[in-house]
Image (cartoon, rainbow over all chains, first blue to last red; front, top):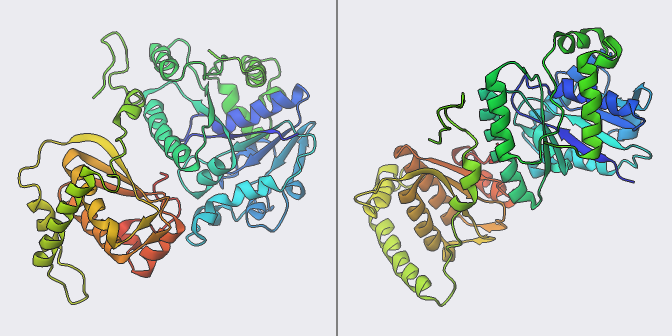
Amino acid sequence: MKPRIVAVLNQKGGVGKTTTCVNLAHALAKLGKPVTVIDLDPQHHLAVALGEVAVDRSGIDAVMLGERSLQEQMLSVRPCLSLVVAGPRLQAIEQLSEGGSHRGDLLRRGLAACPWLDQAVVLIDCPPSSGILVANALFAVDELLVPMTSDFMALQGLSHLMGTLKKFEQVLAKNYRTTLVMSRYISNRRLSEDVLTTIKKYFPNQVLRTLIRETALLAECPSFGKTIFEYRPGCRSAQDFASLAVDFIEGRVM
Amino acid sequence: MAENDDASLIGYDPLAWLQHAEAARPAASWPLPGTEAEASSQDANQEWVEQTDTSEQADDDGWVNDDATAHAWAADDPAPAPTSQQSLSISLATVQNMQAVAQLYQRLLSALNETDHIDIDASAVNQIDTSTLQLLLVFKRTAIKQNKRVSIDFPSERFIEAASLLGLSQLLAVDHAAAGFF
């Protein structure tokens, strides 16, 4: 059975893409769902956050260049959780200037060739940019998870992102199943509430129910190569992500 | 500019366009063969041909002089009306050749008068000739001179090849496959 392949996407930086990807993936894995995370960001942050610091190891770059299969590149990093690192040539792919429109189809072909076996979910951590790599993700998936912070600039970025998505939907003749997750949420700030209200107005039934609250612990754990469940199990952020995983599986939205 | 109510801490609402996006999409405006619209379009075509015949001043490299061709665009619209800041999208047909170029000219001219931001969807193009590419180039340059924005989105491989062959890829900003996606 084909897994849910989801691009974790927002071209704005600092909205919590990698944090969401790492901790949601681990939360799903802890629920017994086999998960693969793909690091599509040449900065390797996803791999580092999971404790893989060997930046010269080939990963999704070799898959996109047709040299390796995705299965060959999967590393088992936790029970039920596999990682495909970015690889040193991912930045070069981002800057490809030859190859016509095929440049946008490299990831989709790599994913299509994978048998997936028992994988339930594949999360693709996209870079904070609007280039070839993000285009590849958008060609490859039907489902998007958009982390959003509760500030005005994130709303502005979301507007730009939606413009991009509408262009892709028009050209590729498909409608993405898009859900949003409120990340780095500051509960005692009125602006956060107003941003959330605005987002719910434009994306009814598309915002996952659990708010991921801003905490220092979430910022600390990547440097130890640990997820929040390993760094401070049972803390508020771990509870948030455990709840978010259930939202993700059951489609619980606000 | 869409603004929220006074109680909100969000002044300008950057997502407001989502509510109007569908309404802003232009209706299909290619006249059907044999219709009155097509007849009037053909009359206009003749006018365009005459204008370009009299105003073309080729440079040494064979390209039409910018000022002369820009004048041809401007001559069709001596008193431009105030234009909208919302984008307007025009889709190129599968075959864009000499037979279709005058019709395209009319659509581009109309768009130029209506809005400040024009998106040209080139994803369907299977065949394109130099007359169309030249029209697009002049259109883009004219728009820039009027402080308007033109983007050629989702160029098909055929479009990219043709533009590249004529050395127009960068001028038309279609030198990469993801053009228009971002």
